[in-house]
Image 1 (tube, rainbow, N blue to C red):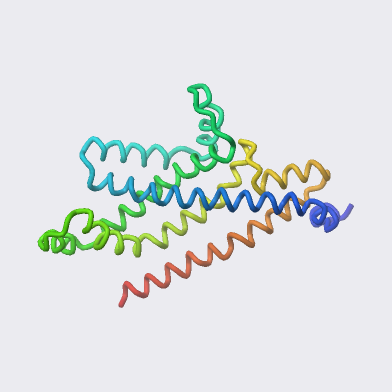
Image 2 (cartoon, helix red, strand yellow):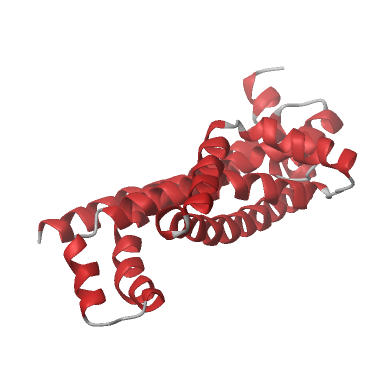
Length: 224
């Protein structure tokens, strides 16, 4: 067999195409759920980290440090295989969403903390002088500016976590990589893995370019 028959076997790719389509759909659902849950949780943890009572701040700091340090693969195994021993059983999709969201929320909290701390203190003091309630100050003054600062690094983290959804295959989540691996075993040919890699590139390359565009756009607005 030559290179094309081994790695770019078109009949094999066509044969396993339905499996890969199901896999990319599951990957998209997993990434979407993770980005929504992880982003919202990260912003809330960031606010607790900066403005909560001291005990809650310490807990938020510990949470951020632990889940930024833990490898996602280790966390996936712990959530899926260890939690049943304490009576918590999650299916593969829920375990993957929980694990990835925990990690993304920790990184999101740090990104938004940097964004909030970059806001001139005078603006917050002015809001307090006007008698604005704290929740209004957060919603109307702090978060809009912090989001603008945090969007480029948060987008970069989101792309990274979307790529890491491939790790969900270790808990039998039928994502794109798991379906491609099964297809490879079924056909005794690595072409499905190459097809999966191409599908990842098609989805993630535009997101990578989006990060660069956002960085340039916000850098220009800062100069102005």
